[in-house]
Image (cartoon, rainbow over all chains, first blue to last red; front, side, top):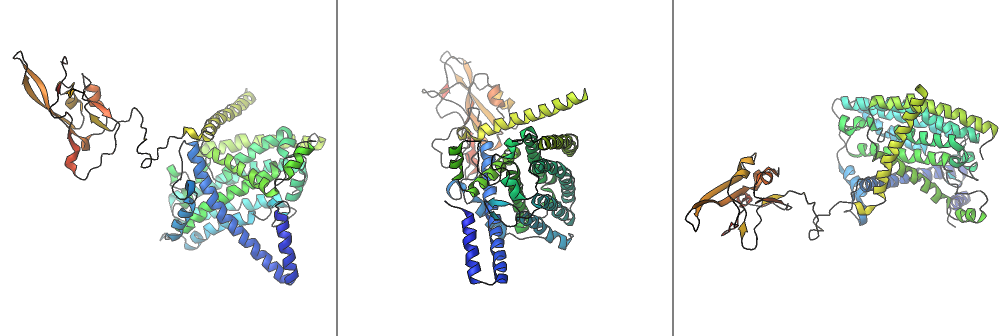
Length: 358
Length: 158
């Protein structure tokens, strides 16, 4: 059976046999960096194509279908075009911040990759405060966006960045509460512990109603945090002409574009880990045969399947719902999501204390 | 009551969003509904909507007869002078003089496909055709004479 765990063990053994400890550490870092960059590049290409295809089919269109079989290489062609374009810096812009901003946004994405378990025992860094780390790092992404909006020296960019700031800061709260209700059930912040606690069933099913409510709130909040429609006020093509990245062109624009999709992947991976059991196969009670069959599917396939299901859900939102106004956006968070998630956390705590969950 | 309104707000919001998602989800899993025409590839089997308006034509029957009386209602209805009706007088067998069209000049480059001429026509002599490949290298080719050479008005149309 294919497993990434065996692959890492093999590489580890080979390194241990041929190099001294310092060299092993350096080589491991190089391998991880290369894998992370490859993952980002591949994800960018795949997700942009997926988005365009999903959008097309929802809108009864065909989508890209000319470059390669079924339009498979459309995003590759787009990327090549973006690489060859000139990266222009506006004359009155703050040069340092302007050039730094896309890399800050990308760096946040890379940092968030660390605690995510892609398969059984296939994880960059299994730190004991995994969920706390994720929620604190993910709030840094607003700095990159504000930096870009401010440095562009453009009214639209600044407005977009400010909207994005208000939005991310607000929706972090309900995302945090949704995550907390799962932490209450598991009693651990470590990603491995959270996944292992879902061996006999995912939290979405085990946690009764509070888990379902927090799942819905989590999905809404992360859609807002990644600045995606219906919460794409920061970009709002029709009002702000792309908002905080109006002035960006060429590869730096592509970095922002890539960062958006990377962020979607990461939040969906976190959602899959917390609510849908990460790489854990689907197990139903005492159906031994069924459970064994499910175990034969590699854990990496389970993880990717769940993550892409959530990504599809978020894309489905984007191409169905109309965009909210700023006041509606803040109303939704402060008057609806936050009170509901607070009440929901209380309910989850009661259930966890009495041990009513399975 | 406040709590009741609040809960019904949330419920109505969620159900209306789900209704929208159901519709788009249905389209996503039914690729047969896709309406995209891959035009240059499927030129032979291209299907256009019935209401598609591409240009004004004058239908002629097998005896090369049309139903245009030369009343110039279309010319009057046209907002931008696309149609020009050139009339002539024909002598009927009884010796009476009767008005008929010599040429119905139609300038495609001015036409906005507004359909007002077709609506104004009292004898249904002109209609909109579903054609769209109108580009030519010579602009004068866009000025068309709609009645075919040697055609005459159908019997019994006044």
